[in-house]
Image (cartoon, rainbow, N blue to C red; front, side, top):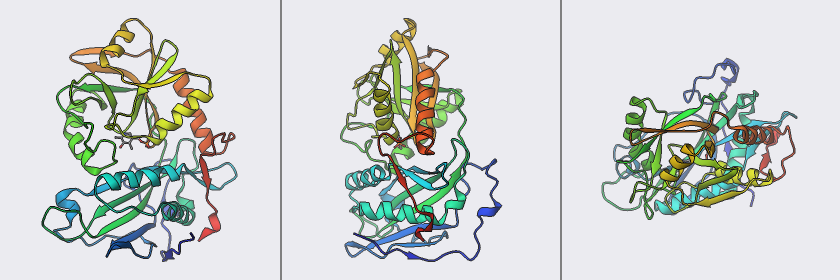
Length: 355
Ligand SMILES: *Cc1c(COP(=O)(O)O)cnc(C)c1O
């Protein structure tokens, strides 16, 4: 189905004011946003309009009961100059998985992808061209019905904002294996990309940072023993030549970078197993010198190499090199910029003349 999207453009774009070599992180937004309202059981006319403030009723239900979910994805520009989206269909499907868990309405997946394409076409001058840079896209949905009382809201907004992002630091990170606080438990909301999951993670993350770590390594809620994931990333280990990553247990986020890295590693001939991994096993492998690599995967950073994990006052060291992680990161970036062939058909081309 072809969707009609109403478009209202800004009089003058601010894209020219941006210095691509010095992009402040998370505070720069493009000229426009995609927006669609849900009322009376259906989504209204989708619009692309100038990014502006949205009046909020103090009783808006998202503020009180937390019906709020989001996505994170990137648009890049190929060597031929055309903008591209990475696996946007997966983000569309995951948004609806999250919506279902949080009692929110589905957003049509073809409209999700079409809206992103048209927004990216309109904002293509905002896509930083340098390697590792991208236009970060933030689709999100929240309950904006003014109501005091506990039930699913009747009114929602679906919005996509875009924010240019420079290359992330590739400094190796230190993780703090958290044994007191938990992120998610089977049956909870850990598999949904829900705002509330982050709310619960903020204080533990601040504590980890005050101890000199970059991020929390989340362990399972029951035994504080099985590794789940890192703050905003999934996690991979290379032990004795083979890769392992925690299996999806209903509590970890089903990362699109995670699933892509699994495919890429297998494509490169490595064995990858999704299974339960205990923190003790990782500590043991570190002692035996068989822990060869550890890295986190997520849209924002790509691949983040892990230097060490603090666990119960001890330090689990990871080998100084991460050759396979680096190679996979390079391959992923080369696919995203069309520098190498895309063997999996992940990239979705955007016509600049779309709008
Ligand atoms: C978004 C997210 C990830 C990474 O998912 P990608 O689709 O790879 O960006 C991992 N863990 C959590 C908790 C997340 O919210």
